[in-house]
Image (cartoon, rainbow, N blue to C red; front, top):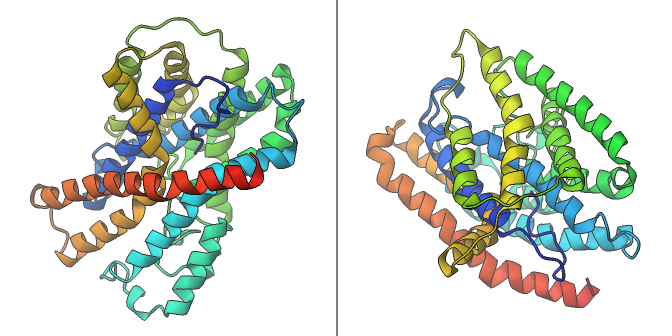
Length: 372
């Protein structure tokens, strides 16, 4: 995910900050409800997984806005230092939190946890701190994740790939060349989503051919479409843009499953059209608006500040909540809702604490240390 990429001297889009936070909190709620679902077909906040694709598109847009006109005085090394300083500190704390909570998550769903030696957990944590993906053979949980202590690390792995491709090659593309790339990526996205065995774009977190294909398919169109949007959009003036964009985004993410079990292609089409049409529209509208008033400004700033910390630290809490549900023999949400709410609130408070007591001080030190 891309967050607050703009250099300090360049104005940014406060509504896009706020939308990141709306999407991040929705992801937490999606994962809570996912614990109680029986399949993709009956999830509440059914399309919450599309928030990742929204993040990718938003990331490409903000990267293009922040850096496209700076390469005459910015080296590739400087770019990578900026990106690492922005993203890597929270990656590390997310993995540490995942390791700290790991042994509290042993349950029938993950019976191997109690037999995992501490040295192996620490090794997985150290590798996770680098975002180097672990092979399935190194999985210590049982879900075949490339980062089994903190599952969302997979999307940061692909985010880094996108940043590398942008810095080395894609930034030099003309608008025509970039448009061709985006069109091809869009066709590949629709083809995969419509023909998917699950009828959606869920996946990308394992190191095998199928999951890597999903990950690159989910990354390529939205990230580079966001970059293209930043280069071609002629922004207008939209009143109440944060409200309307938040409503549109939430409608896309909470939409019930389309087509059911018999018409999986229909949901795949919904996924791909949401990514190709709705998310660029939402980003365009958000970039075209502004916030007025102290409350709106403070809300968008808060949501933007905590969005990345929420996303990258919440999942260890979700693992723990999932284990709690398993301990209670699949307790229904109607009985589990107090613990569910506590988990969501805890995720927000944990993210804010990590932001203020760790992330911001570390990034200030890194900027001073490396003059970035």
